[in-house]
Image 1 (cartoon, rainbow, N blue to C red):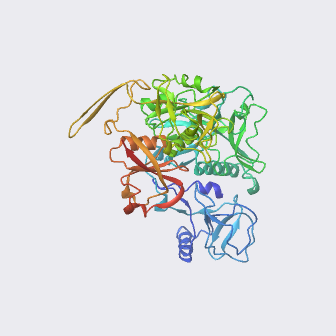
Image 2: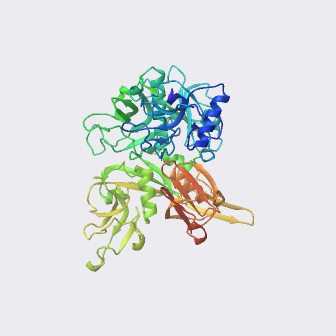
Image 3: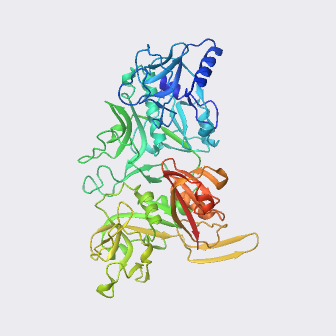
Amino acid sequence: MYYTAKLSCNDILGYSGHLIHIRSSQIETLTANLLAAAGSLTDSWMGSEYPTGTPTVGSNPGWYYTTLTRKFEEPTTYIPWNPNNPIYGKVMNYQPGWKASAALSTWTYTFICEYEEKYAYPITKAATYCNSNASNTMFAYVDGSCFAVPTNPYVSPSSIATYRNICPQIAGLVSRVAHLNTTGKLNIAQTFGRATCERLGKSAADVDNCYQWVIGMEQLKACSANSCSEEGGYSWFWTTPEGYKWPVNTQINGFWATGYPQDNSSELNYVNYFGRTGKIGVADMDTSFLGYAAICEYLEPYNFTNFEQACLLSPNPSAPGYSSCFTLNRAATTFASAQSGCTEFANGYLTQIDTVEMATFISTALWAKVGLPPSQPLFTGLQQFPSSIADEPDKKWYWMYPDGTKTLASASSLPWSPGQPLSAGDCASITQSGLLITTNCTANQWYICQYSIMPLTTTTTTTTTTTTTTTTGGIGTTPPTPTNTGGTISKFYHYSFGYFTNSSYWLSESTVPLFKCQYMCHLNEVCFGYTYNSDTSNCQLLAINASESLYSSELTADPQCDTVIRHRQ
């Protein structure tokens, strides 16, 4: 069966395989020879699918080469059609002599796997575990994680209290209910579902009409019942057994099933990923998801500092970055009250967002650009004190501190929304887009706190071989001591959307959250910046300055990849 075969191309550790792509007459001949060498086998699945509409014999448009996690990205350019073969389905098989046919996915054929260098991945503990699949019904290594459906009976949550802890523990790996936070991870959930439907004997027309997977996503609202603007599509988070949470980017193509989320009048604070009644994707629901089978995710151990861990365990939406912990406080109050409200950790004050890059980081790390209700601007620490009407609207802005002191802000770098600042309003707030607007200081709003990693006392000693930093204060029981950066402060500036293919320009490559990518660069003395792929969470620390003419011409444009330059202070 097609989707079962599609999941089976994982024989070679370190490579994500796929059903063979017959791209030329030479590969067609190779396919025929492999079938003959294997004992005169007559048919093989091809890695091509037709996602929408009805295919036509002899017509290539609409067919796409597919892999385990990528689909409908590359049109199929070579199809050795037999014009006498009728159209049966939307997947493709090949038979020497009979050529290519549009087949039903529930038919049973042999298959040939193809492994390409471009789909190689680092061999990690999670990858090695995934390749030894004895304890899992289905499994796949995707974007740095092993996704698995544990063997029958399926693992299912029995109560809300135990929901986050249902996946079997694997020694040396993080275990959690799956986070489908990339396109590839969403795709594997659908492939798991389609393969399950095949095994249950469903028809090809029903492979997207029989599965519901429990995933690790919850709506963590600040309000009770339906008393605030978070209902529906806001305040959704990926959660873990430890209590970590990350905002969900619900704008990934194909994320929500058609018609979802639908919670405007009830309590649908959980989700499942499903294929039902022609709808595919994530759907919000109440506790009736209990009893559905779960997709488990296994990944390398978290490498958080005490500072990062304490920050991420805040009851508020939170994110470490820029040598600080940022928290989103969802209790509406005035600016004056918000100033004294940053007391969760030491060294707290209303956040100081002084660049577009920092605004982008905060809006991505705290609410994934889309998880904040548009009606909820957030107070920052920026307030205007005009000495005369001539100062309006863009002069004399100050960063305010809880003790009443203030420092003059750099007006030229502040990340204002287009058309801002306005003369009305003497406080600055950040919006869902991540940019600043002026608001009334007496309005009741949510606010963002910033807790600096900056120590209360710092002593730095440097020799030719060793740099030692001693710190006191901050968040967590033991503040981090980045010995290879001493007292350096790093600021990061967006340079371009794109990435470098020359691996000699990289210090390292890993799959981590954005804040971790940035912090890793900060800790590395020879890091000149980084490239971060928001779709795959791929982080490349750069050994070169991307803005230098010697390198900038080699940048491959990609809107998903943000290349950032590091400046030290």
